[in-house]
Length: 429
Image (cartoon, rainbow, N blue to C red):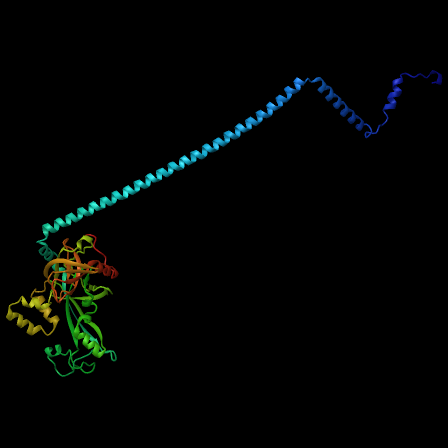
């Protein structure tokens, strides 16, 4: 193609070609951002010029109304929440008051129930007391007879003996080998007749009697000074113990029950340290020995109540007095040298039976029951029956200067010692 035929087809092509050349981005973007900002400022000015004052006020009012509505709704929600909280607290307080009220009502009902139970117990106790009183009125005159028929065979005469042991040699003290009559031996107290552990003389021993009664299971209640320490109340024994320094030792302890020809050996179990009560057990238990019932009712031991005693006052002497005089003298001459042989003979003659006496409780002091029923030496350990027909005490002493002031220990002390020894009360008594 020749230079003369050349033709420019379109002038824009040259411009286009020129604009397609690379242009730096850094130089283009700032320019455009600035234009946009200028446009927005101008647009805003124009818009504000076009908006009338009324529209502006309306817009402000709308914004204020919106803010006020939001504030109102928030305040209303807070107020409602606070009211709900107060209502919940009030309901909780009301519920607590109701619970407290119900608890007070329940406590009041419980107190009334306890009072009712006490009243029922008092009525029951009063009824029982009235029943016992009526029984004592109805059966008072016949009480000794009924008790003797029911329990005399369960009341035993206790006989025992003890010796004195020399501390140095361990041998029993004896009378000198020179022969002495029984009467002379009884008069040795206060004399210069010596006792010695040497030689082959008769062993010095002392005998005693008392009363006991069977309470079941082979257990027998009596006094401590009968079964535990009989030498403590014997002046002869105290004299020889003081003069020789000997140690007393129990030699025999037997129970003679009515209707039984042979005595039963007793074994000492325990005794009270503060009261004159002791517990023994029978080494053999006959099947026909009755059990004396024990009474722990508080009303049974009161001043003025009737009591019945059942024991062996004066021991074998009373029984010998029942025999014709000639026979009594013959029995005493033949068998009186030994308490045990004498009691054997009396038992064969069916003369071993307890004696009943009756009286009233005259005074009470701690563990002492004072009564006026007749009693004497040999009655120690005698059961004291109350108006219920049960044993309420155990005789332990006689006031020599006043026969109306004899002493007994409450049966509760005996029950305490019985339990220590392993005794169990009968449930059907």
